[in-house]
Length: 88
Length: 69
Image 1 (spheres, rainbow over the protein chains, first blue to last red):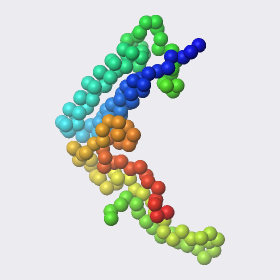
Image 2 (cartoon, chains in turn orange, brown; image 1 turned 180 degrees about the vertical axis):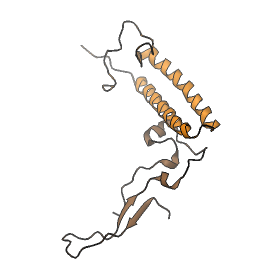
Image 3 (tube, rainbow over the protein chains, first blue to last red; image 1 turned 135 degrees about the horizontal axis):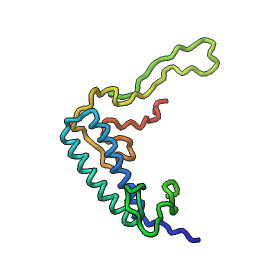
Image 4 (spheres, each protein chain N blue to C red; image 1 turned 60 degrees about the vertical axis):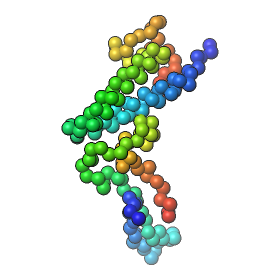
């Protein structure tokens, strides 16, 4: 059974999502110790908004990122289709 | 020139069979030289940050191999 090869855009989008997540992680750790840094908070919210958009784009084309209602499901129910994250 | 690499001279025993290493060095992380992180430090772009492992350029420490050996 020929597997559907993922397009290049998939990897582009995934990397962008990973980079955004990393920036959010770093800013979260930074803000834990710098609660009054308004610029960092603005940047955090900016990236949080960007992350939401990226997630919507990703899930529209490639299925849910999270489960248990945290992501919408496409039709048919396909969260367990290949490729799995480590196969990508 | 200021560097994170520090040097020390180990004791060399007269019974040491191998060629003695007179000066040894170790690299120290940048956060040692920066107390409480000030706001507004220069940052990497998201993709660079993901590859560098830190968002702020000052903390980038690739643990370079010691050139002089």
